[in-house]
Length: 113
Length: 110
Image (cartoon, rainbow over all chains, first blue to last red; front, side, top):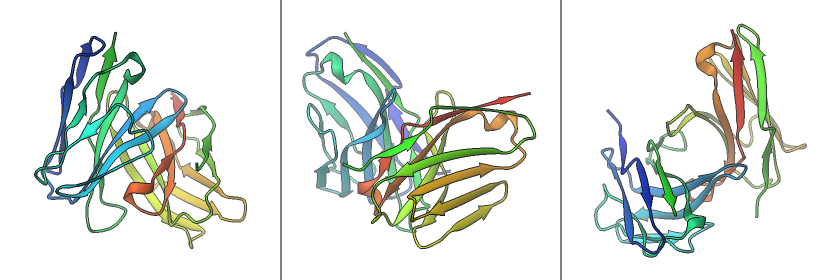
């Protein structure tokens, strides 16, 4: 079964405490990306990765880092979280069969106090 | 940047048709998409349409694209309570260039 998993699903943390949200996929997809979802703003892309060791900024990359050391994993790193990063985060993949082959993870709800 | 707009709320009675509308500004988009988000879940790609098409039908779903007016719509026939969700439209040229609307919350009244 095609699956994108994210951990943790919920996280409450304090300002400045480094955290990592993991994303893993079992479909051997080359392309992975991270989005944040905020009320009234829809989804905005943070970072994306076209392949292993290839990453690039999306629309809202400030305050985030990513790495793509292996194809199946694409962690999102917040080195020093701030309250404005309180949001719902989604990892997504896209396969080589075309635009119809897209999968989203279940989301990670992050609260930074 | 690109602007994709949707109305925030829509209520319909069970069995009626739902029409969710979306306007966009980037006329160079190759694909336009519709996603469904159920409570507590990620987005699920429902359907997409290539920019040189006017219409696409997939079972209860009909997508209409008016390129001249930059208007996209999703019609759900015979709407069921299980269709209650947030629906997002998005436009873009490729995977790394997707721009999403704000989402329309569809409520189906039994």
